[in-house]
Image 1 (cartoon, one colour):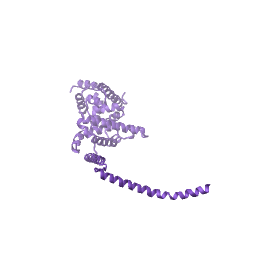
Image 2 (tube, helix red, strand yellow; image 1 turned 30 degrees about the vertical axis):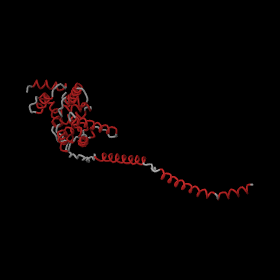
Image 3 (cartoon, rainbow over the protein chains, first blue to last red; image 1 turned 90 degrees about the horizontal axis):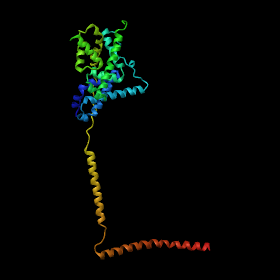
Image 4 (cartoon, each protein chain N blue to C red; image 1 turned 180 degrees about the horizontal axis):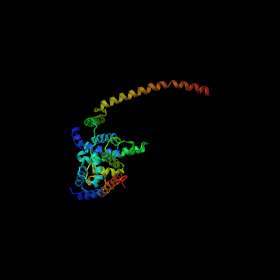
Length: 169
Length: 145
C-alpha cells in the first residue's frame, strides 16, 4: 500500500478521529497531536488493512486507546486533566448571543460526563454510529450501549433544564 | 411535522430507543426555525451536536517513508555460508583419503629407513650434549663424599 492509497483510506475518517480525540482530551492542540500520532500508527499497520472488517473501527479503537493512555499519563503526573485547565476559546469570549452561550453550555456538559458516557454519546449523537457499531468498537453489548446513552442524554437534559429554568422555578 | 410526533420521539430519544433516522428527524426539527415554544429548551442540545460535528484535523500529515527492505541480503549470506561449509568439509574428506602412503613397498621401505635415520641422528645429536652433565655428577659426588 502506498501513501496515496493509505490517504484514500484515512482522509474520510481523520476528522472523525480528531473529534473523538477532542471529546476525550478536550484540548484542541492535544487532539490534533493525538490524531497525528494515531494516523502515523495506522500507517505502520497499513499492511493489515486488507484483513480488517473496517479500517474505521480499527482507527477508532486505536484513537480511543491512545487518548486513554494520554489521560492516564496526565493523571499520574502532577498535572490533573481538569477541564478548567483548558479553555474553550469560544467559551470565554464575551460577545456571543444567549443562544450560542447555551450551545457551549451543552458542549461543556458533555465534557463533564463520565468517560464512557461521553464516548458513547459522542459516537452516537455526533458521529452517528449505530449502536451495534459502538458496541463492537467498545466491546460492550448493545443493551449496555443503549442504557449508557440514555443515561448520558438524561444527565444533559437535567442540567440543561436546570439552567433553562434558573430563576423561573 | 406534527408536534405530538416530535414529543414522542423526544421521549424515546432520552430512553435511547430512537433509530438514527428518527434522531435525524429530531435534529432537523430542532435546528429549524419552527420549534414550538415549550420545546425551545432542547434547541441548544441539537445545536451543540451540529457544532461538535464541525471540527476537523488540520495538520499536514508527514508519513515516515520506510526504507526498502533488502530481502536478498540474508539469502545471499546463507548461500555463502552453505557454500563455505560445503567447501571446507569437502577438502577435509579429500585430505582424509590421501594419507601420504606409498604404493610401492620398496620405496616405502626406503623412505621409512631414511626417516628412521633422520630420527636417530637427531636423538644422537641431543644425547651428545647430555654427556657434559656427567662432569657435574662426578664433582658433586666428590664433594658429598
